[in-house]
Structure formats: C-alpha cells, structure tokens
Length: 206
Image (cartoon, rainbow, N blue to C red; front, side, top):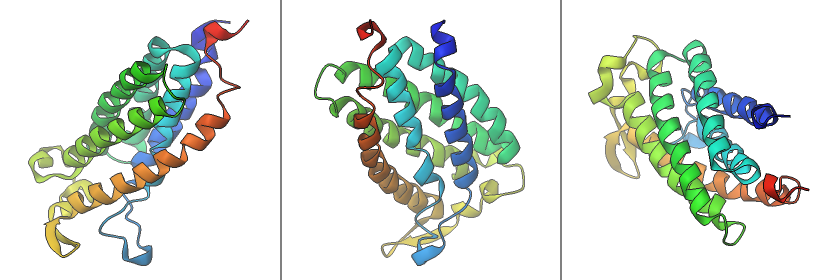
C-alpha cells in the first residue's frame, strides 16, 4: 500500500476540521457575554495541528506537507461553499503558512521529550494562524475582499471593548480565539500521547 493511500484518513480529517472551523469562526460565542472575544471556530481548529503532528510522527515531514496541501485544497473548496470567498482566502493563507511552519518546528524537536515537538509546533503555528486569518478575514485594510454578506462585510472592524480598551472587534476576537486555541492545543497533547504507541514512525515498524 502506497504512503499516499495510507495517509488519506489524515487528509480527510484535516479537510473536515478546517472546513468546520471556517464555518464556525463566523459565529461569536454569545454565552457568558463572550460574543466580543470568542468564536466557535477556536474550539475546533487546534485539532488540525493534532492531525498534522500525528501525520508527521507516523510518516515524516514530506508526507505531512502533502497532507497539508491536500487538506488545503479540499478545505478551501468546502469553505467557499460553507462560508465566503474572503473567509476561504484568509483561511487558506493562514492554514498553509501555519501548518507548514508546524511541520518544520515539529520535525526540529521530534527527537526530544515526547510532548515538546507537538507543544511548540502547535503554539507557534497558532500564533501565526491567528494573526494571518483574522487580519485578512476581518481587517478594514482587506475590505476589497468583501462579498457583501456574513461577518466579513466589515462589521468586525467597528470598535469593541476588550478589558476596558476600545479595539476593532476582530482584534478582541483574535485574542480570545488564540487563548482558546492554546488551551485546546494543550488538551490535544493527551490524545497525541495516547496514540504514540499506535502511530509509531513508519521506519520503526517491522
């Protein structure tokens, strides 16, 4: 069985996670007055880093990059349908940069303590992904990408209050999403650790 055939579950998982996140990021969390600092997409997107890291551990960085690229194509196509072109562009850009960076960071630390590679790659990737996605998707400077519907129509550029400071609403949403991504990313260390013995590096199989 070819490596590409073996990695298709990872491709499918990656596409599903990102497409769901692209859709859910359009909906602020209204419960507990969190509407100005958090969207539902923050709870699902960190799973993409788990999928990436597990692929990298099992098949290596080259295969992980192929899964990222395949997941990117499928996710953008689904995002255009589920969300909007601007969301798809923002997500695609942030996804490619952050996930490819995740592959490199993970590979650099894979020989150290089991938790270090997934922890560092996820944290660094989350920073880059959040900055790129929210600025492209919602900042006024990228308004030329608007299509006239959804939250990407510029409404998130209006000021909101975040801990008593007025900032564009998308900035407070970005900070809130990042904080949740960090917490969920830390939680993803549990399934990663649990799967270590199952998804051993391919070269170690025999």
